[in-house]
Image (tube, rainbow, N blue to C red; front, side, top):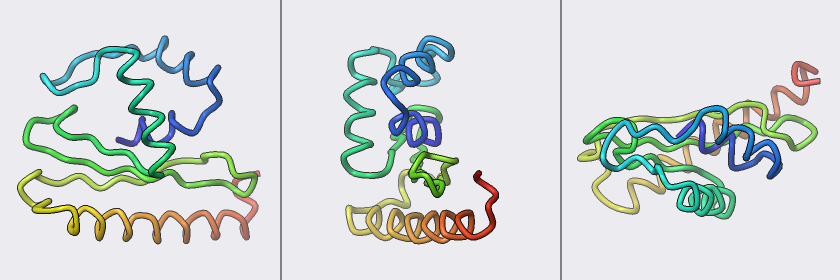
Length: 119
């Protein structure tokens, strides 16, 4: 989910280079290995503002990733939260987890703006 959160917010040229460099290696039967499907997923990540890994890396695992934006509104890094899928009981739980991640990434982004670390 970290990779999707970062890759989704790159330019199309950089996204293509990343896909070519890292490929679409399957880790589980849920891993997105079709490039067209991956590009659609990256578009959904941009639209909703966070990424989801639903057993794509680890069976029975879920992961949410939120980008951290640097002062120039470029993605500097990402923050993720991984947990067993059984702990995400409903959409409300997912929303609370993502909301907490977003608040944290906004604080980090603000901190980077003030420190000059992302220049």
